[in-house]
Length: 406
Ligand code: 3PG
Ligand code: MG
Image 1: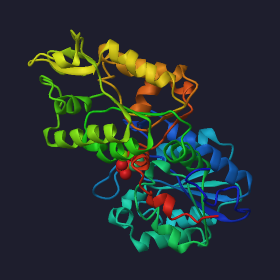
Image 2 (image 1 turned 60 degrees about the vertical axis):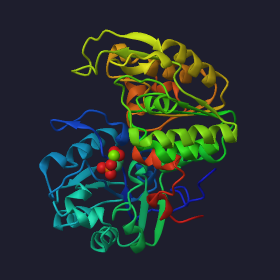
Image 3 (image 1 turned 30 degrees about the vertical axis):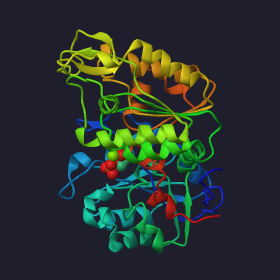
């Protein structure tokens, strides 16, 4: 399995032991209600395995970005309640603003084998968590008698925090969970040992967010496709008029460099050959909007490109058809607007129809694929936004690095 030779939950014996599991329950919430429980669902295989093996499962996670300590709206209670509906065992939420205070200690001391305690949001401890403080790392480890730590929070594995990394210094055994294993297997295989042709598709608004991803994927892939807002900086770098489209002027030289690199390596770099334009960005985002499609070298000075055009949909679709591995990160246009979702839908459809292994990076692209109804047609949809991007950059994620090798 490319990129992974870590101890997994299949290699450890947790019977009768307390096991601290870092999950990513950083789920989207609106007015105290979870709007998408994917990340909780994705953690279930590991949780169920540890329960059925007779472990006492203590779950920890962050939620959101609380700035000044504990805040009711960032409590993990809603996630614990949702989890309780999904498993057949007792789930106790340890309401404790200090995360590992008296409530948590009491709840854990009363656990029976196969039961679950969910701790409060680790970011309620502020810098103790986010600056990887030894005190919180040690408290978390002590809570499970310094025994076992399982890392299953792929979405947070790019953070070197107390609950994702620091805690491992104070426990006897570490392992990755099934979600981590699956994420690393799919993303790792795609990048390190892809079945070729390997086509990478990047979109999203800003070139600046994907500099290292573009650079790394150009080395690894056979064809790199660029769409979305970031394509206009590339088109401007080619000398085209791009009207009022989103452009990152500081990154024009970078785009030129990448185009030269693609040529030098003999890699295909596909940019939109036509584009869907409008007078301005839709406001609100799903407002009715009049659009037209023009060739990419024919964008009027007062118009804004907001999606790929029809010929480009075909061009990108053809590239996907002959691929054996496809990685996609970032929408092709303003997919929140039905008129400007066509490019993203076309790419999603092309991926759904291909026999290739298809891997969707987390964040916006995952949201788009799910919202557009193609989720079950993909080989893998990552639960990590920032984490999957850093993986595609070729970085070693701290939360992966700290887990013991086999
Ligand atoms: C995410 O949603 O990206 C992860 O849960 C990490 O959250 P963070 O970006 O707040 O660290
Ligand atoms: Mg994030």
